[in-house]
Length: 631
Image (cartoon, rainbow, N blue to C red; front, side, top):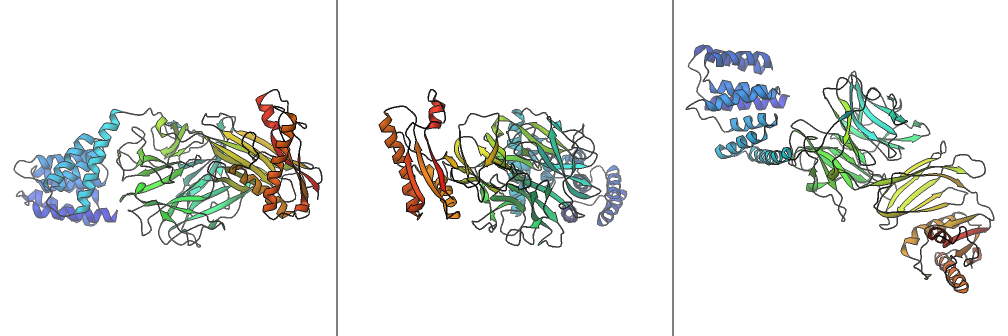
């Protein structure tokens, strides 16, 4: 506010120097009263004096402009427009060019884009000054107006729905975040000027009354602007004015343990700075964190940055997203969809309809973000639109706003996302890991690897308190899925997901067998070409897991087993199955596994696990497995 007042006074001084004083004594006297009121920030008194001044002298141009400035500062844009227009219309008194700029700002904030664009053009035409920042801003506003006129002619369908009394109250609710299964909603709420987190769970498609998230996370300080990993196990958030902070606001993380949360910790001096660091957004694999900061080295005021985990689990030095996303103006509230390829954020730098608009960007094949796209009108308006998140299935957007049917202050709403703005389709695998004999929950490592890109999409441990995991898998690729725990045989699965959307996620109950003779594992991610026995590159992920098991358990010996379906000659099938088993054997030998611990055998089609009368059955029978011979 102080900066705005200084700008206002400077503009007033400039206008005063360029305009004649009023010849009407009463008008000039009231104008001077207004100047004194402005010095003490008594805007209402200044307005009263200026209105008296123009009532006494309707051609008192500088007083009219001053009235427009104050009303614009108070966001009374209709009154600001009225006074600027009167000042410009005074015969024989050409206004200073900035008056057109100010009128354009008022009209832009009213959504009168056509006329606002004309005013900014008149400013450029008449401005003789050398303030390049002001000229650049006017040119930016002209682009906004041109964009907005077209956007309004092609509106998106938009019907926001209040999430209801279980979520929203008379207080301020904002910045929602969903887990990947869509069943847990975490959001910020301000009560008595204190920001805290609340959580609601969906039961029978209905949100339950939200409750405080955790007394280990919520404190007497402000907590807000959170992001949660798709499995709901890691909450990154903004904490302000804490004793362990490096700046005014820092980034923190808390890990879920059972049904509770650990004490959060600061992400450290590598990530946080002496500046303002806030609004984190985590990628679905948990390895990259986007956030907003006004630290030095950015493109403008507030930029989006990212930090990535290294192989040792440490966050790296933040990198600015650069001109692909950031502008000389402000960007905020990033959100990375669980597809890992779609970024939503708000900006007042890219062409838009108002103060802050919502945009989306797609990750390109080179790993860079594509040119941001405005999500459209009337989702975006001349008001401020920020804090969009998108449901895991890509159908709904969630945001916060003050609308007529609200419960009080800002509420959380949902709406159907425009088709063009929808993320890539995803599914997820969710389950519980237990001991096969005792049925007790296990702390196990769950890993999901994209076999096409070799990217690890999920790599985390289940909790020994509940054994739960949830891993996101974007459609359009093939995934290796493995679960491992010390002292147990690992579990292997394979998901081949085409681009056709699947309505049902994968829900698994996984029972791990302890290491003992006779234990058998089907290696579902060992691949060969048809009638060939050379290991395909996609097999390396599974082979690495088998290698890890053998290196971690130096006393066990295994038999590698090859199997085929019953199509073709039985002898040829036996030879092929033997050659495939030997290919795995040779790989392990090459990785320094003692040959005394390994053997291999081909069974051909003699040990089927399914009928051979269907394609699916035959596929199951074509397999590679191993059996423990000695522990």
